[in-house]
Length: 367
Ligand SMILES: Cc1cc2nc3c(=O)[nH]c(=O)nc-3n(C[C@H](O)[C@H](O)[C@H](O)COP(=O)(O)OP(=O)(O)OC[C@H]3O[C@@H](n4cnc5c(N)ncnc54)[C@H](O)[C@@H]3O)c2cc1C
Image 1 (tube, rainbow, N blue to C red):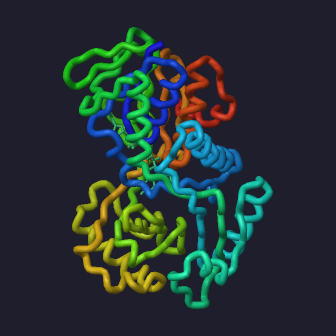
Image 2 (image 1 turned 90 degrees about the vertical axis):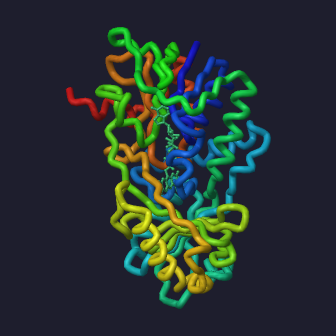
Image 3 (image 1 turned 135 degrees about the horizontal axis):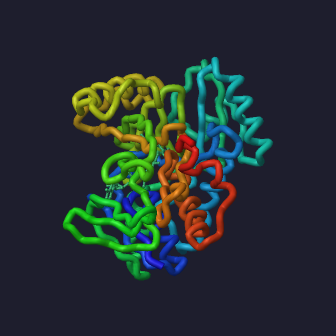
């Protein structure tokens, strides 16, 4: 059976690898370079806490497990950094944190309420001033080097027969009546397939997708700042009341203001992004004192645009009334990609997966 995957981000690379492993003939079509979409501009924390309701939490917890399984199946996984996650919330969120940790423990998810001293043991260079609110430790979490992940999965897929075509934008989804027959790429080539999978992330609501093949998205925008690791010598993923930070390999730490701290969108100019980066760095210096000495020439700030479905939850499944077409678009895609790829492969093999039912595209279709 022939399958076309559109988009070589975390989702498309995972699908390509898993479908190739299952024996399908896969062609992956990518408009630009592999891995340079949202997956290149992500905080890439693999986590499942603070992700209600229970079903969505469990999906993300299974996502972390799927990362571990993939690492075993692949044989090595230099992209996977299971550092554990620390969360520090403001004093007025103490109760919310306690409730969250208790609920997670009931779900058997590794979650612990920790003291400021325990936080300090894990992150000795973090400056705590004694007015800390609530702190949690989530031992199973970590982060993914998305570029390594995507490159290695695509290379392994190509070695096993998948065709990876970059610089090849899909400009038309071809149909015969209610059956999707494949796609046309920008150079005019027609590609035929039994299944065409939309893994185009934040572009999945734009041309060539039109109703009912397009996904309803409500993208939000984040800022990612790469600073020298010696200014923020963090060794776990750490969420603070104002920003997140984590190691980013090769002497770099990634710093990301929390969602909602700054009001920006796709049209925000880079000069404004730089101003906001300077602002968050000056505020973060309260807990990472060496940041106070950091000059703009020594850090880089960029925007990331979330592939956020309109109701916040993954969109996974066929489109009602259409044959041969399947969508996989999600936020938390770094956490979820290996799991979704495995479940979608089962569905393409003809075995419906009940746990995906709540995430079907049909929920957006007005009867
Ligand atoms: C600031 C920020 C922080 C985040 N933090 C986290 C986090 O901590 N944990 C987590 O799990 N997730 C996080 N996410 C979300 C996560 O990064 C995304 O869910 C994930 O990267 C989406 O992967 P994707 O493959 O769907 O999309 P992408 O990586 O964007 O890939 C889609 C690809 O499709 C290609 N494409 C589009 N249209 C076409 C076309 N017509 N023809 C051919 N190719 C096409 C694009 O060029 C692109 O390469 C974050 C996102 C942002 C922006």
